[in-house]
Amino acid sequence: MAAARHFRSIPPERPTVADLIRFGAKEFERAGLAFGHGTGSAVDDAAALVFHVLDLDHADAERAYGRRPSARGVERVLETFAERIERRVPAAYLMGRMWFAGLEFEVDERVIVPRSPFAELIHARFEPWIEPSRVRRILDIGTGSGCIASACARAFPKAAVDAVDVSGHALEVARRNVAKHRLGRRVRLLQGDVFEPVEDQRYDLIVSNPPYVSEAEMRALPEEYHREPALALRAGRDGLDVVRRILAGAKRHLEPGGALFVEVGDSDVRLQKAFPKLPFTWLEFEHGGGGVFMLRRSELH
Ligand SMILES: C[S@@+](CC[C@H](N)C(=O)[O-])C[C@H]1O[C@@H](n2cnc3c(N)ncnc32)[C@H](O)[C@@H]1O
Image (cartoon, helix red, strand yellow):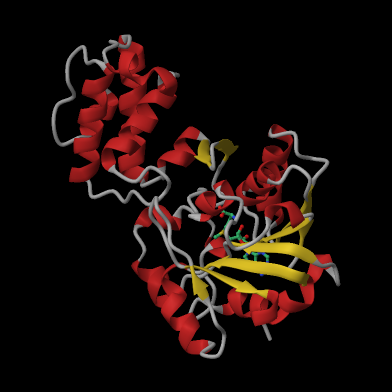
């Protein structure tokens, strides 16, 4: 079996699905893979790939674990494990999809893999920070796959969403996802820099997961992150280039009573130093992640 030479131990004979997941997880850990792309651990990563390749139903996982795939099925799983190890490709790109806020999104190397803690905020409809019934217009800056814009449109069925990205390639992926979720009437995709495509329009809610990685952090990132578009991660020497522009224009684009939510990850400390007078509210998440702030229109300069 050609894939076998990529592994440190011998693949199990006539394995069950559970055996394959265990084997993959062990090999992934030994190979020092990174799991920051929506799966979270070696076991999750291996399980996602096995279920995807064998077209198994996650809703019936218990039964699936005991199944013995055909020899060809096992071979295809091992080939996929080998690719994950050799090329350090995030599992989501190998599968061509990832789940975010309960929705499935198509992904490929034109967009980052959806994984933002924004999913939790969307699930709570941004309460207690805003009054959901008042939200009629939403702006998503740096929409990538369109995951945050689409999930917001689902959470606020009466709202219209503008989704901006500077990358035409990313917008091609977003277009597929907006169509997949039948949101074409309410999600408008616009190409351009930060607020430039929306001119002087105003919104009740502005959300953004912009690029926020500094030059030094970029160099230290595991290889998996270098499979993602650099434009989606890198934001100047201190990682704040795009966030600065969002802060500069947000007040002008928010309705009275509106609020801005931005993910800045580990750039939070640098951001607070750069803007000591802004009263950032840093949000807490039950399911992990952080580095997301909220500012009301009245708190912005
Ligand atoms: C971190 S990704 C977030 C993608 C998606 N919102 C998500 O959460 O998965 C940042 C996105 O911002 C886009 N971007 C980078 N610079 C931008 C700019 N100046 N104006 C608008 N979008 C930008 C990138 O192309 C990328 O798709």
